[in-house]
Image 1 (tube, chains in turn blue, orange):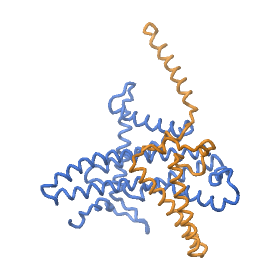
Image 2: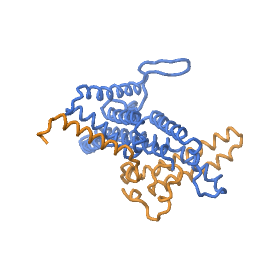
Image 3: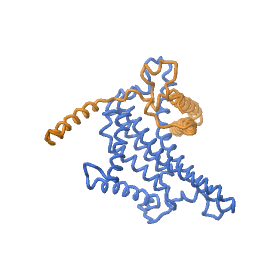
Image 4: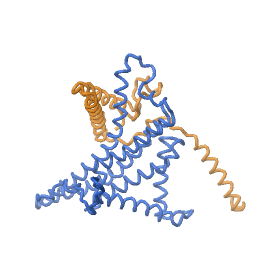
Length: 243
Length: 123
């Protein structure tokens, strides 16, 4: 396998427009390009789809309405009516991840969700936002989250650090899940695609496998966007209705 | 239906819609078990691993930072490795019991029962 053809070469960040402000490298990379493309695609999908705003929707408009209703129901089921103000944020997160994942399935494209720093930044925004909401809403009562009622005081020095660590591990498990799924799937696709040529005539078997795997990857792309969204909703629910 | 003028019909529809919406207003999710992400055996296994490791990583990070700050290397890190491991086990335990992702303990009715909720056994 030639250098640069490794299964991991697809994740390489390429600076397309090098920009440096002071010591800060803010180059416009292939990752940024696909994020911008994703935002444009989502906006176009929603705005152009609703352009006619017909009472009886056409195909495109029903797709837009379907995605709207899907997230609206998700929020209603998990958070209740108190979650309605946060709909725009959750909907944006869902569409951004979903379209970003699906863009990653286009050959020669770049999957920005396969970088932990991207998913971690998104998870951190969710985590910090949810924590701030909880503190604003419940004031000091928020901190009772770390000290469950009915626990003897003697247990507190042991229990409180454990609860805090458990709480802080949320953004990590949230981001790692999305990132690892995308990274593993795309690497696996490339590895098996590499077998197609090197096995010669028997390459049809890995080829068939790659075709099946591509379908699976598309499912995973949607599923992971959904999982990220529903976890955001569940965290929000915890913040709004403190136990 | 059809002998009524269409505007009246739309009006009554509007009223019924408003009615239905206001009834939907104050729904608070009653059980969390139904709102778990879909789970296959593989994703369950993967989640257990991630929960364990992420809590451990946070524990190590906190211990390391405290050590840097207080100059007590390596003692706090040793303590927090164990606390992180315990937090990881706690995460997995909550997940297996179908408590979801909540920090802290759940309401009384959840913590007392012996039989695990459905979602714990669903695969």
